[in-house]
Image (cartoon, rainbow, N blue to C red; front, side):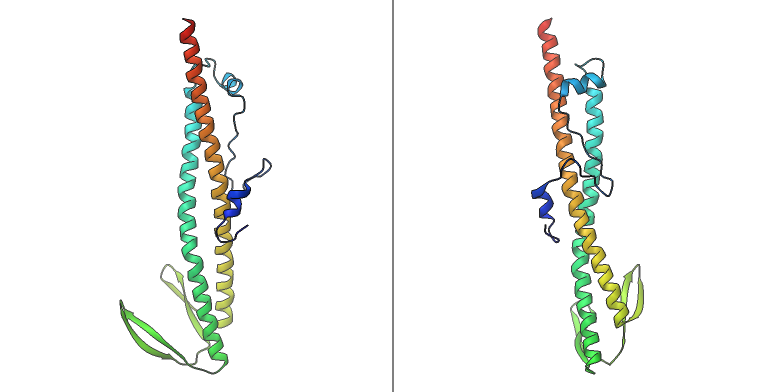
Length: 195
């Protein structure tokens, strides 16, 4: 199963014993529509109450899907950013340990860069978010970034898993909606033909 694309979930599917660890409810396939409708409503020609319940369930899945797509996009941007920062910190540490200076280009503003030579320093400052920057030793920064990278990678994999499971549940709900609707149409037509 791919850790970066999540395509394994789409090709393998989920067996009946799978329970989503993040609480996405399983949609139960309505195997016998007539029996199901009879157990839920008195007048089997009126399937609207069942359709409303299924539509509500479908709407909830659609909202979850939007949240998961947004989360996936955020994590797909975050992972390469963390990897790039980790690579830079490792380079700074390597240069520090080799007693070398680092030559780089520093961005003053949009499209304006100047050459810079970094003096030997055993600290690095990382943006943590919310306009917070914290100074760390190289080892602390590397440990923090590796932990953040692992967390983001795991989060991305979980998002792929959740998305694939959610798509299955959404499809099952859509099939149920269609089958219940068609059953109602059929029963109303039969009732009309009897008259």
